Amino acid sequence: MSTRILPAADGPDNLPIHDSRPVILLGRGGGGTRLLSEFVQGQGVFLGSEINKSFDSVEWVETIYPIAIEMLSATVPPDAARRSAHVARLHARAEEVLARAGLDSRAYWGWKLPETTLVCDIAKQAFPKAQFVHLVRHPVRASLRRTHMTSRMNNPIGRAALPAAYAHLGRDPALIETDSPVINNAHGWRHHVDLMARCFDGDPALHVVRFEDTLTRPSETADALAAFLHRAPPPDAPPLAPDPERAEPITLDRDDAHRVWDICGARAEGFGYTLDEVLD
Image 1 (spheres, rainbow, N blue to C red):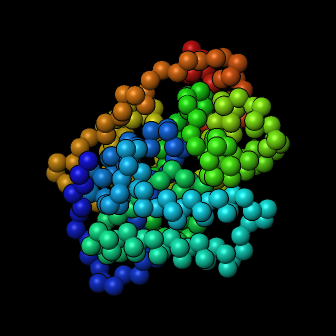
Image 2: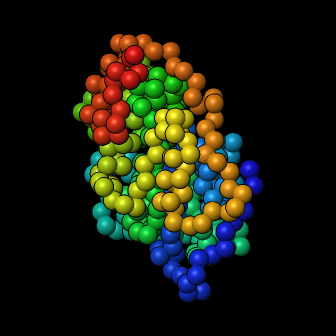
């Protein structure tokens, strides 16, 4: 996909990077976040010079992943000095990505990397004027699909994220290997969403998109997202177009559905989800 980058916003020529207004896309990997990336790029947002087949901003991996692994593996929260160091790394990466594209901090830019959700508080501290978009999906549908790397122990980010999710919910991480992938996914979903709630808690800098609404109300959902971005899109901006493969029906096991709801239901209800809607 080619992105037509909109002109830089009016303002001083040397805007400090921390005063920039990136669009930062969040959510659980494998849950439809590609849709957000496609849409905002169509709105003229530059998400990087290296975009993979999942429409992730690859240039951010080598910065976001180490920060997430360090923070999730730590036994105590980072102190102010360590947080400042993480913020500095995000600033440096932003400047490098923009410079590589011949842009500056006034550009209409951002990034999409689902694992940013794990360090959303650091991203918010680094870019206090950022606009955050969080894509959420019903936890039962999300958990009964395939696992994401953050719900597996076969990679560095998963080995940090999944035990942190279990510990967050008071379940012994030693049970990860014997729990089913569905339960692993459910713990990851709840952890991600709890991190978002702790970080934003009604903050107008966050716009939530329910994946299901992109299927049932695509025009209304697209209009609301475009309005949140506060910039006039190009005249040929494409519509919100869900990937049919992401909407494939799940094979529902009712016992699994109830177990997932026991883990995630209290938070899922805040998004308007119910258990009955997937059981009917």
